[in-house]
Length: 123
Image (tube, rainbow, N blue to C red; front, side, top):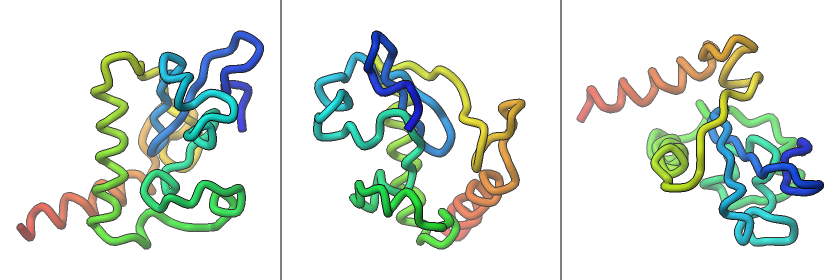
């Protein structure tokens, strides 16, 4: 994990689909040894809905695209939760799978969004 886990007067950040949020106000949930501390300082997108909060889960080479549309929509709902939360604040994009170093969506994120858009067309 990163240095942003709420120790040494640092904030607590978490990332969902590459969007980073400051969740320091939720330290009773995300702080050290709390129920959701697993999410602090990392992007654990798949764990948000899989419920697998282990180091092994983070190390698996899994693609969001391998999941069903329903599961991907669940991930998007978690992201929406953080976007709309009263006290959690968006702080930026994580350079990696979902966004590049310029904060632009990667092809991978675009493919995820396309998968969701195609499903919406079928409804």
